Structures are given as C-alpha cells and as structure tokens.
Length: 254
Image 1 (cartoon, rainbow, N blue to C red):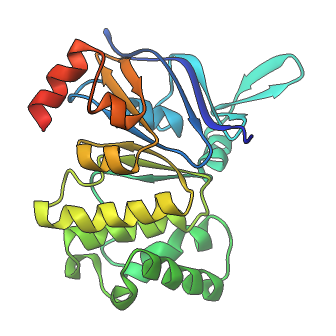
Image 2: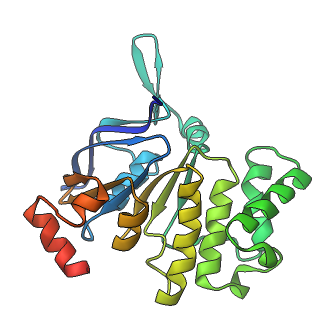
C-alpha cells in the first residue's frame, strides 16, 4: 500500500476574530481525487491555501508526501522554515486558481516554460519541448504561439493547468477552476482535469460541479462553518447524504 499524499490534522486558521478553519482532519491517498464542496465562506479555499502554505495555519499540521509543510524536524526540535525553503516545498505542489494569472506579454508556450527555466534551471530548449507536450495534453497543441488575450477563458485555464504541470508536481490543487468561466467553456476544463485523474494525478479540487465530483472524485468532503460536516464516497455523500446540512446544500445547488 502507498502512503497517503496529504494528511491534515487539526488544521485551524483565524483571520482576526473570525476562525475560518476550526480543526480540519483530512487524508488524501496517492492517486486519489478529493473534491471539497460547501457554501461560500465554509473554509474550502482557505484550507487549500494552507496545504501549499500560501496561508500559514494557526494550529494543526499538514504533511504532503511525508514532509510537513512549513517545518523541518532537526532531532527533537521542529523548526519553522524560511519563506525560501517553503517555496522549495511548494515546487512539488501545483495550483490552479479561479483566475488564470497568466503573463499577458507571454505566449501560451512561454507561460508554461517560465517556471521550469527560472525556478528549476531547465534549458529553454528542454522546457519548450515539454511545454509543447503539456499544451498538447490539455488540448491546446495548436495554440502554443497565442497570447492570453487571444484565447478564450477555458483555453487560458487549460494553459494554467499545463503551467502547473510543468514543475512535475506530486499534488495538484484546484480552487474553483471553472467558477470564472462562461457555462459553455466549463466542460473543456473539466475534461482536462478528467484526463489528469485518469493518469493517476493526486488532486484536491474545490468545486461546485456536483457532476464532476460524483463522476471523477474518489472522496467528497462537505465543509461548512470551518469544519468537515461529512466525507466519504461521492456516490453516497452526493446521493444519500447522512447529514441534514449536506442535504440542504445539495438541494440548493442541484
């Protein structure tokens, strides 16, 4: 059996007096797709940002591939890492946001090449070859030379997915990747994500796409008020939820 890719234990996060996360426990096995569902303000995106340390948790621990994020143990002492070292941990975690955050002055292939060249030290020739392969993987082989302004929202989001994959992540995080798209463009992004799932990529996906969660997810986690209300097989959680709050939410989004 493989070790879990992500283990979160008692994760807490507060902004001022507002406690956004109130003790999140979650395990995601290697190769699994975990879908986080819940109303706005439930803490889903904050938790995702804690996984790759874009937000510093106020309590609890998160490990990715057996390494505690934000800390390193030296003998009996657990030391908090400097930002430069946290950035090194973050290299192994890809993240796709609601907004695409592409560099507008770079073509699609240049956007995908940027991190491997600047951060990982790859040669431009090597990075370009891999970038073309990744754009092909997300269905954009014919758009490598286009600038973001020349691409649809769905195409830009697929470039963002290819860019995240360029650093060869062990884990992919998606923060409502289709929420900023017109409805007719949602399917092409979800198809790209289905392809990643089929290839065995470990993924945590914050989404309101119930159909995607039911079809592709290995685990569905319903959050509300900064806690996990219900978690389990998506076919069970999304069809026969045990908790009243889950039923209320699903009744409104279906």
